[in-house]
Length: 313
Image (tube, rainbow, N blue to C red):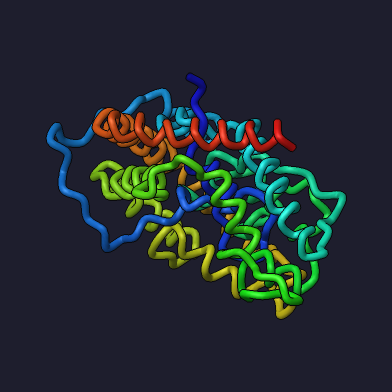
């Protein structure tokens, strides 16, 4: 049975904003760990860290156990394509045509750009702490452009020109078609919750916690009074000029980013945090083996529904 990432497939179906385009640009799996959440210690204590991961300190090139459950772009693209078939048919019944240049999009990146604070040296060299642009092959953020079309698509109105709008709009039609035979009790955030647990546990790991303090001291020695690795993102976001559509990354921000990365390298924070994240994911995958198998069946069902919709046209 081929594995597909259920959370990404669900993201390709469940849209709650007018970006009726495909997968969400920032999967919930990459939400920042909440400092107030405190997990009980694991029965076996803190897991061992892989020294090779610590030494490499390469989040972009290191596979994480939960990634094994998919993030397959082809599968996500199939679901997106099926979604568009259902949604476009529904919208045409109301007289709306989609942007003809729209194409189904695949999965997003496996690892979010600020998962361990700043870590991508190549992006930081020019963007500092600014979020990268989400890649897209499509010319506009939505495939239905008029306000009336958006209202029908999202089900914000119950009737349009004398015709009843289905519950949840045409997006609701997409949802019901793709989620056919999926249990109503499905916890759609299951995988994301596991991912957040691993990330939070890794941040609270004693070996990581002491290096977070060391990073803070290193940054202070370089002239930056940051109390947390994500604080620079918040501070610099308000210091890129008045025109938010055309942000200006200053030399000072770039210097902060360089110092940030240098301190992560000097303290070995990045590699240790990454290794801890991987270690906790391994523990969680073993603990949740039954739940993950059940959740995986949902992905198979959704993909089967998508293939059927595409075959029927």
